[in-house]
Length: 230
Ligand SMILES: C[S@@+](CC[C@H](N)C(=O)[O-])C[C@H]1O[C@@H](n2cnc3c(N)ncnc32)[C@H](O)[C@@H]1O
Image (cartoon, rainbow, N blue to C red; front, side, top):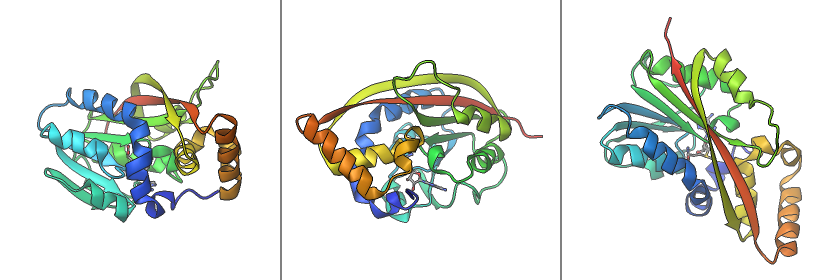
């Protein structure tokens, strides 16, 4: 299944029905950003409709909100937010031009994560913080280290800390369930192999079995890194 165009095609749906399920990550990043020097220049990579960017801007930071989906990006507009319609693999920004970088639930969609992570390391000032969040496979113990750990390393980023964020959400309709799965696709390889109609059919079956709603355990990790320029 190709989820690359999912966000372009479903901007309104994503913004209003799906993104609220990821509130735990927005709250976490809101706390993280209070520790930045104020005002900081912060790049939000794969910003979607700008939920993280809005929090940063409300804290008086100067934000560059970057996404390749124009319909989502235009929803991110606001005071102290510069919109950048660009691909994370080739950021049209100078080396060391931002103080911090955040990428919330974006890396799992990148075709070449190492390239995009290296770009984040290039545009942040030397020693500047980079925080990347990704979905984790829920309820599986022991867990293999997430692929991102190796990717961060390969991209020349030094990991300083990792935090887990867990929440249960109740989903009540097929479209939202399929959309949440798509954000989690990196944890659901077996579903990623299926077609759109397979996913819809599976979602409908699960909802029918469970009285019209299903509770999903969502788990995310936040990886804190720094980049050092050579
Ligand atoms: C799950 S959404 C997360 C959006 C936002 N960070 C949030 O927390 O709500 C994933 C986003 O990644 C964007 N995206 C995917 N591939 C991208 C790429 N190569 N360059 C820039 N943005 C990309 C999509 O357009 C989408 O907005």
